[in-house]
Length: 180
Length: 220
Image (cartoon, rainbow over the protein chains, first blue to last red):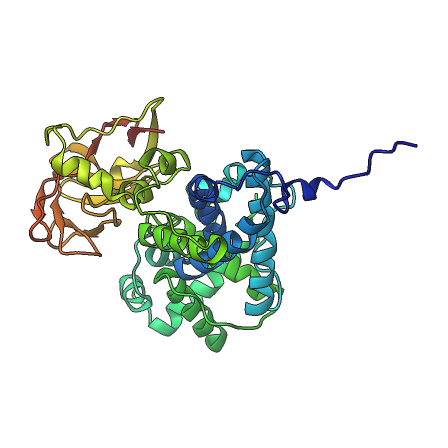
């Protein structure tokens, strides 16, 4: 039997140990803040929550990182922290997971949804009936209020809300998935 | 349906205004609707890039809370942030970039943004930008505006040259407004309004062309 103790890979990036150089945390932050923010933003869709969750990720992960970890290991650990932070966000907010970060996603840069969602969205919009497509374009791409969108479509605001709701439901059905 | 549609609409409104949507409970079907709304929100040109003020304030907080020290501002370099993919954050987080532009020896005509290893990226249909209009666009590395001036297409950076906030399109006044300070740019990138007493450089331009009805910009 091998005498070398088994080490869990995940402990490699954890805890500063004696003899380690202090972590250049600013370097880590600078290299990762934009990609982690974009990844989280793509799963919550708003600035306030994206800032809150990005802060939680760095506040939790940075003290656990050791300086001997490579840039890739550190990034992977930050993505893993983002995954659990997002999961607890949705548990608190909605009760079930509205969006997730794929278990196999090692790097935020691999994530299609956080980089260029437009082609997939155009593809989904093209499959919707014209009034569903129109309300989503007016609301999300042209940033109209629901009243402005209703006026543009010649329907009441209450009707526009129902059309919007149905359009989102249909968009979800035709494969508008956040996770790749 | 009406009551649930109103609730979903409030959620959508929160997303569109950058607010944290209020807590709610729902089943799988409602979760699917919310996920679709989040995905749609990601298509908006102003989505997804961190606010430079947030980047700097979190840096300071991390220094205080995890390290017990705060290194001086300005150590976040432009190159470092560019490498991590945030042009807006990069231009903004370092006051030194603005300083360079204001005090450096570069002339104000050197305002052409051509990244290393750039390629032509389609960003909009020409039909979506009729003559006389402007439209926001975004690529993974650049956010900006396309302007159609009598058939001539120009692509401008959408980042204020003051402190890096993302500009808003003001089509009525035919200008790009800074949400952070009194600064505004004309559709040719020139400065219309700047925060007293600083003068500002004009907006950098990107190379743009039209191919098969699509507007392409030279970027990464």
